[in-house]
Amino acid sequence: MQLMKSMKCALKLLEGLLEDYKLFLLKYGSGAMGEVIILGLREAEFVTTPSFVQKSLQFKKILPEGYENFIVIGICGAGNPIGFNSPNTEIITFDFDFGGKEIIARSFEEYLEKAIHEEINIHF
Image 1 (cartoon, rainbow, N blue to C red):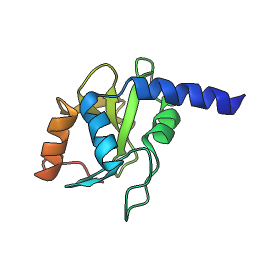
Image 2 (image 1 turned 135 degrees about the vertical axis):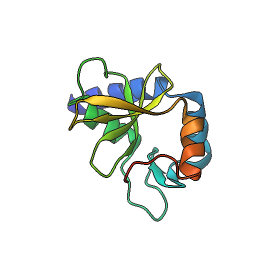
Image 3 (image 1 turned 180 degrees about the horizontal axis):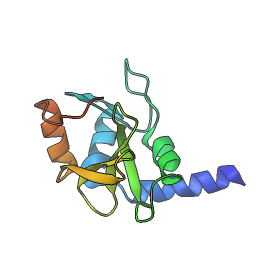
């Protein structure tokens, strides 16, 4: 029963993915890009990482109301999730210490550009 519930949640997550993030997953699977590690469907090569499905389901249990559709694409060094709250395209981090969100980029594409140029300014 628990497995079936987890699979339904995972399928719902896949439906809510941003198009540019889907393209990244299809081409690379997961990986390091500039200063960030982007979670995917499998572990990144040379870096031990969980899947975005695993982390999204984990954080779904502890994020506040309004974040039911949050897709986790990374974890900062403080353990806070980085991702987007589908259908919104902004990449944000939800800071549990301060109880709020910080917008990192307007889109996944902008997030990648900032990561390449080391402009994210979050400790990973």
